[in-house]
Every structure is written in structure tokens, then in C-alpha cells.
Image (cartoon, rainbow, N blue to C red; front, side):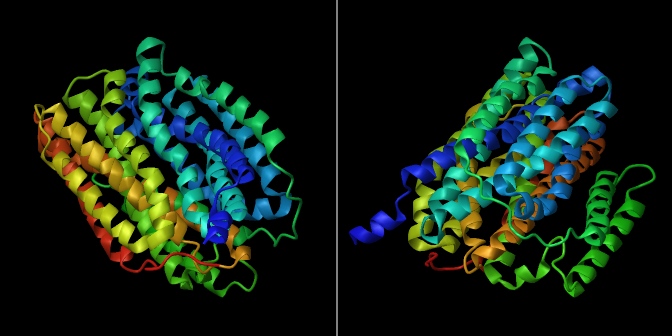
Length: 460
């Protein structure tokens, strides 16, 4: 019994490595959450509608989705340490450029460049921690890896709101500079060189099919319901995606995303769950600050403060969720988490301009607990049964799917909100309530893939 405890305890080396990785990861997460409370100010600064301004987020997410599949191959060739330092440097440069943007077009372009670094940071952090932890400690190390994703929504909106109201929106990007510099210093000293491995060739045909497919699909979805419509780009993007699937399944050498990995039931179920959960989470991250600012009339700082209960609920639940996942397995924890998340989201389908703040705060707290109970077990279960050599490819595939879900969620829900606003002239609260039903529906649909997750805990 004592031997098992010793074998599964997170030792000091893993904890130090986790601290270094978390410091780096939080730079990208903080930036994303700070921008959500600045969208209203950006519409005023650039005299642009929300449908255009939301591309500040979507361009970032799309860039991430396109670079993630390359990350595993680059890590194999150059080593995770080298690529980690490169990703932080690119993110730092992109942040400086975003802060210096002179138009909405330049800001969107620089956000796309920033996403190249941000897109590598998350999968590299997962590769580093998963390989260091081993299967028996995967749930706990995934709980640590989830800290930036949950800590950033707690601090990011508050910090972003304070910056936007006290200085201006440019400093939500400039503030990344000292954090990135600290992360680079810690990483340079704290990460060991894992050397170079023999890497397979870069799949250029797959890249040429997948990257434009993702961009066109998300762009087409964002244009749905607008004059001219988004059907042509959506159709072309879907055709390219189908072509990529056919090509990847027939490729003799390893394709950009190895679709054969999805024959593992746990990975396939976790991937669908990741897509659905990120769609609803990032969609809500766009909607909730806009609701507080446009319907309730709050400034950016107050909107950020009102988002705190959700992140607080997630942070409180994280330590218990990781241990529980290691003890009883992913499926029961995730099913409970989906039920709790659905309950938390329900109140927002009834919002008006006068919904009590206490009701919304309590709902966000419950919502945050449910998010933690879904995110950690799904991340841990995805790798169950996979050989260590498959971890880089699986990480790239999972993170790509997560980011596509986030891109689709932010884009589609912004388009739905714009559509519902036209149907409810003078009743903006009703437009938000209608849109939150779509968030609730995406959350509930996640029950289906959750039933396919492993029932038992991971073992050697």
C-alpha cells in the first residue's frame, strides 16, 4: 500500500516542472480572457460592429488550430524545450505588435501572428507534463495543467477590465511582455534538453488541405445569416476537410493528424467531448461579458468581477476532480460534471435586464464546478491505452479539436446573437437568453460521447 502511494505521489521534480510550464501557459490563457472584456471598447475604438470585432478572438483561435498539428512534428525534430522557448518568443513578439495595432484589420492580423506562438504553448505543455508524470499520476498532473485555463478566467477579466478602464485596451497586450520574459527565464533554466529524435517528414499536402479547410469553415459559419451568406466558403471548406480525411486515412507515411489514432475509443470519445465542451465554454466567454456590458450597462472592470464566481468554482473543484478521476475513472466524474454544468447554464437562458445578480453569480459558481469536473477527466482519459510514442500525435489531435471547438463556439454564437438581436429589437436581454439556449444544448449533447469514456481508472 505504501509503495503504491510513493509511486503515485507527485515528486518535487514533477512539481517544479509543472510550475515552470504553468508560468508559460498562463501567458496565452490570460491574454485570451482579458480580450473578452475589451470587445465592447474595441468596437468603440475602431468604430466596428461586434461581428467584425469578434474576429480579434476568432483569428487568434484559427491561427492556433492551424499550427497545433505541426507542433508534435516540430517537437519530435527539435525537442520540446527548443520549441517551448520558440513558442514563448513568438507569443511575446505578437503581443507587442497587437498593442501597436493602428486599425481593426492590423489588430486581427497581429492576433493571428500571436496565435502561432499561443497555439504551440498548450500542446507542448501537455506533452512535457504527460511524459513526466506517467499513467498512474496523469489525473493529478492534468489537474495542474488545467490551472492556467481556470486561473486565467478568474484573473484575466479582472485584470483586463482594470486595464481597459484605467489605461486603454493596448495594455491588455503589453502586459504579456513581463510575464513572457519571466516564463522564458524560468523555462531556460528549468527545462532539460530532451534532445532531437528522428522525425517523420512534414505532411505538406495534409497542411495544404487542413489549414484552409478550418479557416473557410469558421469564416463561413461567421457569415451565416448575413447578406451574401457564408454557404460558398462553408461548402469549399467542408470539401477540403473531406479531402483531408480521405488523404489522411490512405497516407502511407504519418499524416498531419493521424486519424487512425481515433480507433482508440477513449481518445475518440474524449475528442468529441472536448469539441462540444470548448464550443459551449468559449461561446459563453464571449456572451457573458457582452451581456453584462451591453444589457446591464456595466463597465469592463465590473463585468470582469462578475465573471469571478465561474472561475472560483472551477478552481475550488480542480484538486478534488483530479484525485477522484485517478480513483474511480473518468466516466462517472464527467457525467456528473455535465449535469452540474447544464444546471449552472440554465439560469442564463432566462436572463433579462433585471435578473438578480445573486442568481447569476450562484449559477456561474455551479457552472464553474461542472467545467472542472468535465475538463480534467476528459484530458486524462484521452490517453488511456495509448503507447507513449503516440502521445505527441494524440496531443496535437486533441488540442486541434479543442481549438476548433472554441473557434466554432465563439464564431457561431456571435452570429446567433446578431441574428436574435434583429429578431428582438429593443429587447437585447431576450436576444441573449435565446442565444444561451444554444450553449445549453451543446452542453447537454456532450452526454452522448461521455458514455463512451473508460469506466475504470488508468493503470500501468
